Length: 131
Image 1 (cartoon, rainbow, N blue to C red):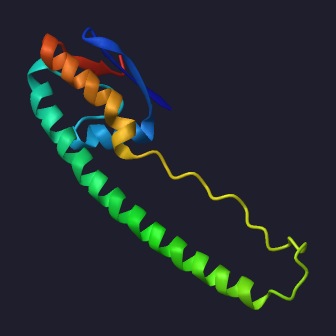
Image 2: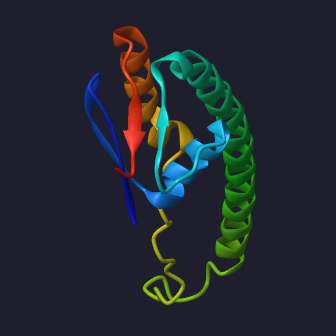
C-alpha cells in the first residue's frame, strides 16, 4: 500500500506504507488517515531530525561491521587462493555472486518528508494523508 502526504506547502510525497509508518510512529500518528498541523510541524521537524541522526549513527556502526567482516573474508579467500596456486587457473567454479546493494537508509527515505515538514512550517500549512 502507498501513503500519499499532501500539503499546500509543497508537492505530494508518496511512500510505501512500511516507510511511512516508521516516520508517523515517531509522531504518534495513525497510518490510515491523519494530519500534522502547522503548529505541530516545528516539533515534528525536531523529532525527525533527531531520529535521522540516531539512525545514521546505527547505520555507520553497521557499515563498519560489514566492512570488517568483508576484509576478514577477503583475507581468508586470499589465503585460500595462495594454497590453491597449483590448481587449474581457469577453474571458475568458485566465482561468487555479486554482492547485494545495501538497503536505502532511513535518512534517504525520510528526506523528502523532512523537506515537506520544513516547507509546511515556513508557510504555516498542514500536512495530511488518507483523505
